[in-house]
Length: 229
Ligand SMILES: Nc1ncnc2c1ncn2[C@@H]1O[C@H](COP(=O)(O)OP(=O)(O)O)[C@@H](O)[C@H]1O
Ligand SMILES: [Mg+2]
Image 1 (cartoon, helix red, strand yellow):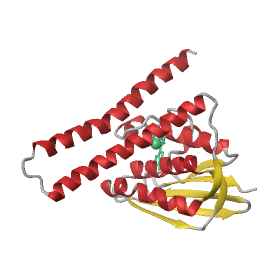
Image 2 (cartoon, helix red, strand yellow; image 1 turned 60 degrees about the vertical axis):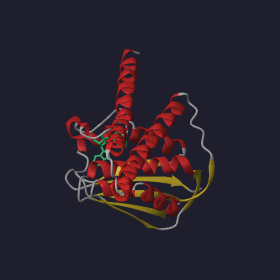
Image 3 (cartoon, rainbow, N blue to C red; image 1 turned 180 degrees about the horizontal axis):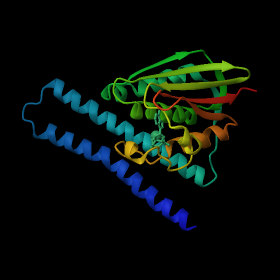
Image 4 (cartoon, rainbow, N blue to C red; image 1 turned 90 degrees about the horizontal axis):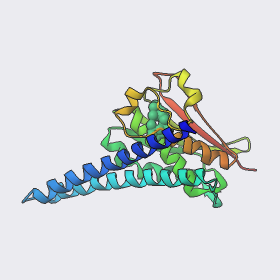
């Protein structure tokens, strides 16, 4: 119980901090815009684009918070419909392209067409969390690839990056709530250690699997697989 209270307290603090950061960035950019007497069209556009990135980041965080609330209430209901994974992969890559460009990460989608009856919005949230992590933790000059596949009665996604990878001892805890690898490495980046736990719960609700491969120092490869039958 005590542990529950403590993690809830930490969660509220982390989530508030994470939502506050993009707001602070936006406010200072808006102030710069308002205080510049002769803002060129190019400068105005750059400001708006940056603000748009911050708004999108906040929207992703709020989606995760809402999903977490549904999970906590035991109400993670799936709205299943035929879902095409290759199209979904392209959509997520497009949505995160400006975020990736801002951090110098190259991002691409490829792979097979693969259809499954699933909750499209929840799957999109899972893939978005995985790709956002890859972009966030892989570092400048990294490459992130998303591929869709079908194999042996399953369909899935694999998200591969050329970043630092995950230390072997961290792998068993990676999908736990609040777990972050090497607090010092992660603390420079926003996050509460909830993204992968939410991915795990969404995939579990679909009767699927989620896992990570790769060696420390040699990139990571996160994959999900869903049964088609
Ligand atoms: N692609 C990746 N490369 C390296 N480390 C990663 C990657 N994805 C996740 N991690 C590590 O796993 C931790 C947990 O990820 P996540 O649950 O999404 O939480 P958050 O991103 O909020 O820290 C991250 O803090 C990071 O240390
Ligand atoms: Mg994350």
